[in-house]
Picture 1 (spheres, rainbow, N blue to C red):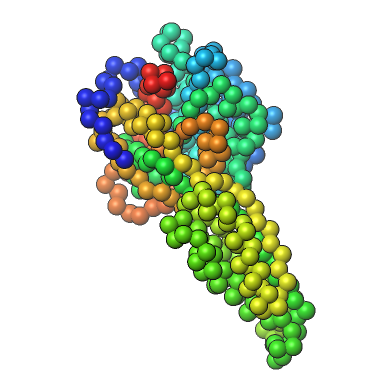
Picture 2: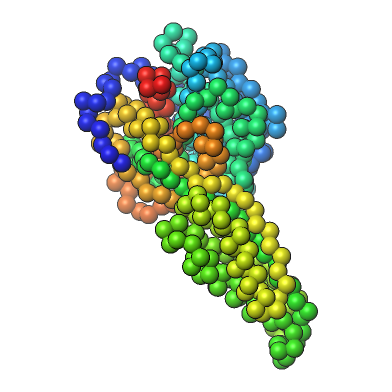
Amino acid sequence: MSRKSEADLPGDELPGALPEALRAELIAFRRDLHMHPELGNQEFRTTAAIKGRLERAGLAPRVLDIGTGLICDIGEPDPDRPMLALRADIDALPIPDTKIGCAYRSTVPDRAHACGHDVHTTVVLGAGLVLADLHRQGLLPNAVRLIFQPAEEVLPGGAPEVIKEGAMEGVGRIVGVHCDPKVDAGRIGLRYGPITSACDRLEVTLDGPGGHTARPHLTTDLVTAAARVVTDVPAVVARRVDARSGLSVTWGRIESGHAPNVIPQHAELSGTVRCLNLAAWEAAPDLVHAAIDEIANLYRAKSQINYIRGVPPVVNDQVVTELLYAAMASRRGVDAIEDTEQSLGGEDFSWYLEHVPGAMARLGVRDPGDHVSRDLHQGDFDVDETAITVGVELFTATAFLHTLSS
């Protein structure tokens, strides 16, 4: 993205610096969440912890009707001045925490905050506490809404339920962050346009009469049929769309048969469909269905397809991305901002963007000087906790600049 000159950016006069005592409290809060991860729509302890801290700050959070997740306004909404919403996702992943020698590793078997949602939650909480204090001083120019969303990791995500409960009413723009272990702590990554991909889930069953492996010509050779679906469908689909759309079918599971000399009657396959382009994503179900049916029919297998819609791509609005750029530059300088590339990962933040313009930033969490390649969704995932301060500063500055640019 293009760089603005420092002369075009606001100075250091923006209020909202993070007090040292709150900085230490937020690190402790994040570590507590990290030790007690909860899966999507099960985040009861997490919700209670957020609610309790916001109430101690004199705020009035509203827990969602589903029992997890909450919404909290800072200041009085004004119909003539749409709010900025700050969004965090609060759920964890169903994988074990494999960190060694970490005092705050997960205490829950096969559960871990391996995607950084504990950081996202802490950042929005911290920004909310700073903004609430400024509001009490009469220094917050416009109301801000905090959204703590459940079930981001569960297709099609928890965002539709949050929206259904009125989270976007009175909101004019929305911003969020996502941890990035490829970016140093102290920095953020920004991008105009698509920053994530669409992600759907695909479940396929193939059936045939079964038979003896000595006579595959007399039956449906189901294992071969399944293998051809696995290998040929991605290639066929890729040739039916513009290559720039990045439409990708990838299988994660295939299961069939119980004996080496028996052709089975049933096979199951499951995987994901990812796409960089919104138009291609909208066409993907029909393309995938047709490709599977064609190949299954070629081998005389009966196919049943369950195509589960996930999330569209997150497409960052240019004006809101520039707002995040200006906010970060005002706090840390333009050298703390880098371009980022579009990811093939999915994010249900995209559902909010069906209603209002918004943007997501990549929040650097890598220890500066650490050159080991790391990724999300791994059991040993951890962050440089100075990223919490950076995220809070980014959001508080964005809240002020949002008013100035509205």
